[in-house]
Length: 367
Image (cartoon, rainbow, N blue to C red):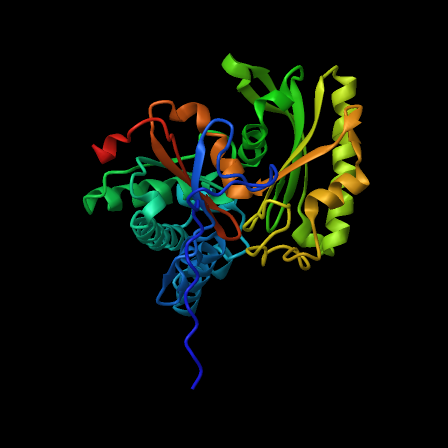
């Protein structure tokens, strides 16, 4: 008789863990990371899969099938899983009644799933003191996403769970790039006013020039994306190595643009990528939505980038790699001055997550 597999433990900061390098750090320059890439099991697998962008599309498909099967409205007006977010928003605002009802119903079902996922996460040790949750990812950049987040917030408060739930404060396409600034030790950024950043997702690849000013203690302030480039790699179905080569091409174009604009570009490339990041820059697991094999000792993304771009801004290149949800969550750091413990969810192809805490202050929820 085969032994039952033991469930994977949630990824959280181990006591006394110290990274050998800058990759996948727990003690970040301005905040402590308490967990990321939590893998909490439910009845039908990992609960995060119930509140992903893919899950929303499946709900939309099922409801559209019912509407079409009942010939409740002309088929051309009923949304499909491929209907773009802006078109779903338009259907909500001015679409035919049944088409609008399909989208509303998908939003309601998704909001219920999102609320349940959050409720389960809040029971995990790293999340128990969380006061605010910001929701990013592609779906949050739409009226559909905003309504789902708002409805989930109402459901949570109705159940007596007093946690703030809000869309992320920056455009999701920029948030993952902006947060990379907060992955880098402030001393490395001293004397510069910008750096290159990368956000690798299951559908899109984005990179950009992130501009900043040095605040008190060297902490970056007034962070913003000055110029960015994107590639929807899922349409082209590249191999892993082809994706890395294309990424380097985009980074070189951005470096050239930074020189033309007179930017003092730091010799750093901050990268947000799905998965659990090891201190040596390899990825343990969680990259199933990326093309090819990114996991294990056979591939090291920071080394692959440095080999193809050994110098940036006239200096030896330093690559800092972390989880993409961590990077996106860090973009909200300036908005969390009065919050002791907070978290981020990113609704993309999958559902990313991370939680943060200010170790020097006692949480209000703990008092």
